[in-house]
Image (tube, rainbow, N blue to C red; front, top):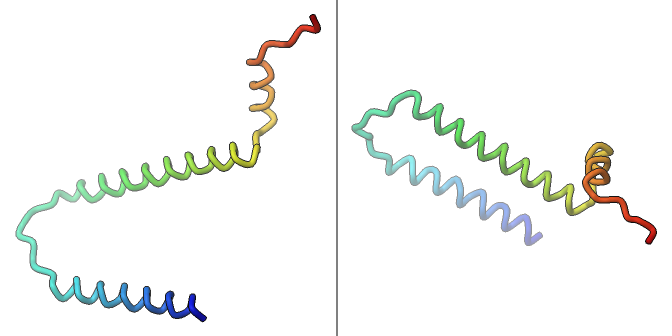
Length: 84
C-alpha cells in the first residue's frame, strides 16, 4: 500500500510542477536555428546509443556471456602452455 501512495505522490507532484512551469512561461525573444534542435536530438541519440552499448558490454562481462567467435579470438591471443 505504501508503494501506491508514493507513486501517486510522485505523479501528482509531476503534474503540479508541469502546470506551474506552464503558468510561469514567458515569451522568448530570440531566434533558434531549426538545425539546433536536430543537433540536440542527434547528440541525445548518440549518448543513448553509447550508454546502451556500455551497459550491454558490462552485463555481458558480469554474466560471462560471450559469443563463440570472441572465445576463439581469446584462445588465439593467449599463448599455448607447454608441458615443461
